[in-house]
Structure formats: structure tokens, C-alpha cells
Amino acid sequence: METVEITIQRRSRTGKGAARGLRSAGRVPAVLYGPKRTLALVSIEAEQVQRRLAHLEGSHLIRLVHADGPDAELHERMVLVREMQRHPVTGEVLHADFYEVDLTERLVVSVPLHFIGKAVGVVAGGILQPILREIEVECLPTEIPEFIEVDVSALGIHDAIHLTDLTLPEGVQAVGEPTQTLVTVLPPTVEAKPTEVGEVAPEAAAAEGAPPAAAEAGPKKGPEKGGEG
Image (tube, rainbow, N blue to C red; front, side, top):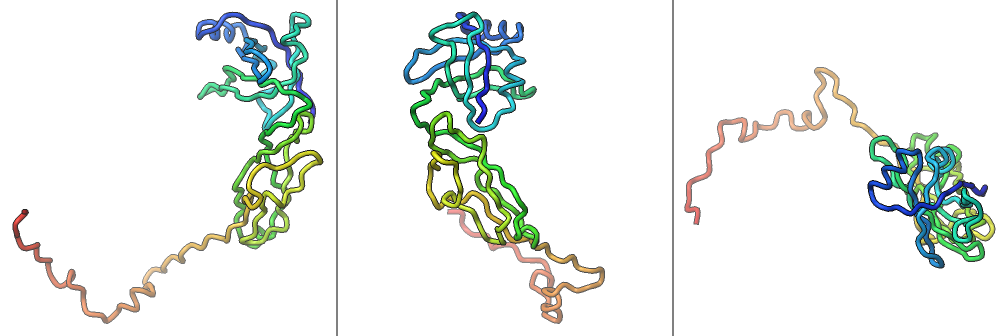
């Protein structure tokens, strides 16, 4: 996987007012944290976030470069994006959380699944039904797959691909129940044939000649009054 590089600056102010000020200046507030470091407050150019981070799927390794020269705490740190908060209407990135990783230690991350091919069951009229769009894997940060391809071409109706069926890159191990279903092919849905004008539906024809129901013979008698207890 290609490493993404972004430039950061240290920030000192916190709070909603400070965050709005940064966004007005074209920057996105962010935090950097990890198991072996104290929380650091940083910011990134909004243009960089939009161009290099906003479109990423899954887990990508990111190199932080400190804009104001080498900084022992911030410069050349390798991180993953743990969360990006977005505006509910515009989709604009409002805040980012970066998690520092150790390149020598394995970790668990989410990787998207890309379904390729056209299932024979779909050709026969079935419906391809993905159950999971991503899975968790364990690997070194430098070995995180960008995505995992799942070839569905051989799937017939009612067939399925499970977690244990995946072919993963060397050094990458799936996390989860091996029998977990990833994708299946459902049978085609059958709609009831509309009745032609003047045609008697089968259930009506079967009942033809039967005596009229009590409901049709006259009005129903109301329940006899009794004590309400």
C-alpha cells in the first residue's frame, strides 16, 4: 500500500471557538495520540485533507511531516486515521483523529472488500447479496492491504463465500469466525401474475357455487350486552 504524506502544524488553543477560527483560515483541527505518546494538538490544511485523505477507504498508513521544521514529537510520525468527523450536510471534514503506530508491531485494522466478476447465479436470475463490505485483518502497518478482491464468478443460487475462503496477502490474517458469510446469491423473487380482466382467480373459482358467507346473508348481530365486570 502506498503511504500518504500530509503536512501538519502544532496548535495550542482548544474549544469550539478555536476550531471555528482554524476552519475559517482553511485548516482542519486534529489530534495525534497513541499508546506510547501523550495527546498532541495539530492542524492540517483543509485542501490537503480533501485531496489526500477524504476519499480514502479502509485503513491507510500516513506519514506526518511537521511544517515548521523537525519536531521530535511530531515529525516523521506514522499514523492511521481513526476517525474523521464530517459536516452532516456538506460532508466537509471538521476534525480528524490520528493514531500513531509502531511499524514493528502487528495490529488489527478494517479492510474493504471489492466484489469482482459476475456470478453464474446472477446470470440465471439470482441476486448478488453482499453481507459484509469490509473485514478485520491482523498484520504489520506496512502490510495493510488497500482492499481485498472477492471473485464471485463461480457462485450459483444459494452459494456463498465465507471468511475462510478468502485468499489473503502474505503476512495478513483474517480476524473473525471462519464460517462467517461474506456474500451470497439469493434466488430470484417471483411476483404473482396479475389477473386478466374477466378472469376468475383460482381461489375464487374454487369457492364458486359455495353458499354465501354469513356476512353476506345479512347484517351481523352485535354482541349481547353483559356485565363489564
